[in-house]
Image (cartoon, rainbow, N blue to C red):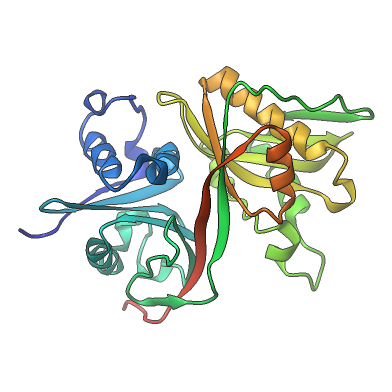
Amino acid sequence: MSLEIRTILPTQIEHVGSLPNLLPDPQREAWVSLLRCGPIDETVFVASGLFSPTNSYLCLEDRDKTAVIVAYKGYRIFPYGDEELLHRGFAWMEKHPTALGFHDASELPNTLTIVSPKTRPFIPPGYRSKSPPEYYKRMTAVLPLKKYPGQLSGNYSVRLLDIRDRGDIDKLLRPPEGIDADTFTDGVRFDAKKLQYGLPYMGLFLQRRLISIVGTHGITSEIAIATIGDAFTKREFRRQGLGTTVTHALLVHLHDTYGTKLVGADIRDDKPGWRILRKLGFGVWKNRIAYQEIERTSTTS
């Protein structure tokens, strides 16, 4: 039996039901395939972002084997399932870049990050390890929260951001000359498409100056799950409770607007966000999630 590959582009995803039989094909097939890829604790957070308009994905099946490749266009890929199928899927992707939303092979990233619950992440053909894996903890919390930050004093305000705030966000995350961007932003890589597609981002302002943000990576109101990230507070304003305040405001918004009951985030315990999540009552669900940067060794002509 030959490998069956189904691709679902983000524009096809509009409404998601909590049960597979509520989903029209091909979304239903993708959902079922995803849940067959492994234990729920390894797939549920991909599921929470699976139907985000910023993502694309491949479903791979051969007899009783299943694999799914989920892509944040341009820099991050989540491979789940049978490794033999993943190898074949990536080889197919090299020949069909439009399957993951790229115009042509020249858009395929030279470097990207593999995210995996395995200690040794799967590395697709045509790529090699660029740096050792970094290990994150998967944090979760049930909403509504039982812990609340104290009131801030001063000329601070918190509100939802939209695409008109893109310039302020870029300015906040722009490193000084000579400073590595990932080091300066603690690894935050903001993608304006998330705002364009309506994923909630919350900002905290001092008067009219944006000094702290946190965003949503994926959200499904029907299964009441969301993932958050892209948290950053300007360094001179840290340890004042601002990050906690803006994160709490986002979580309240997710609960009140989308009915979110479970929220998760992957974070290193040496990053500022770790203290914020712990302060808000998040616990560790999975102790090691591998993030590994890889680079291309071949070019598709």
